[in-house]
Image (cartoon, rainbow over all chains, first blue to last red; front, side, top):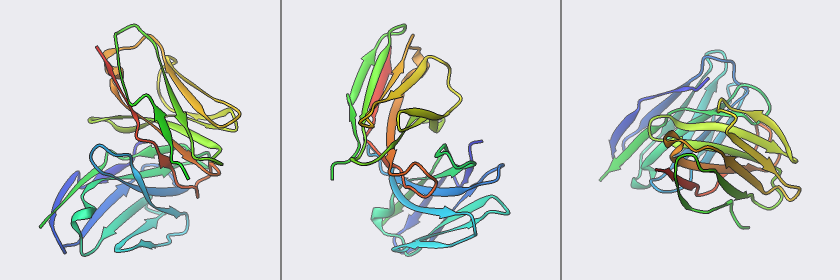
Length: 110
Length: 114
């Protein structure tokens, strides 16, 4: 039930854009996105609920296509501070049981 | 508001021993969940507690157990430790424990089994 994230790793120059995808084999109630910097705890970015709603957070936004059981995270005009590992967490029921993807390592270089 | 606190930060144990990890959630948060993080497997769900009841459990052997107290603090216990149990154990709390409540993670307990 672990969602599949792609790509596994990406290197960007400051100002470039990136897309991280998260796919599940099961129907989803919600998708959460988190970022974890090395040696730190994962930090919440955003939640997407059923309905295909797109959400935004600064220059980071995400979409949720429940028919395709996919979510995508969009990072525009990347900054050095965006570096870290991004995880999607998916819920296949309403009980707060998350399955996290294996993560996407994103490195932004000057 | 204080964040999620996990103790201890580091533990070194020997195969066969048991270990107890502690998690204090953010004040007012009723849901506490536990995750095992390893380089190869990523974040693996262990279990989730809400109002002292285990609501969900991941695919881990019975050696992994947990509980939640009336003040929402939670403990996780691993018995008969194996080398493969070496990992970062993360605890996360959420306000309502529903799918619209963000998870707030602690800094984790790094367990090394030798």
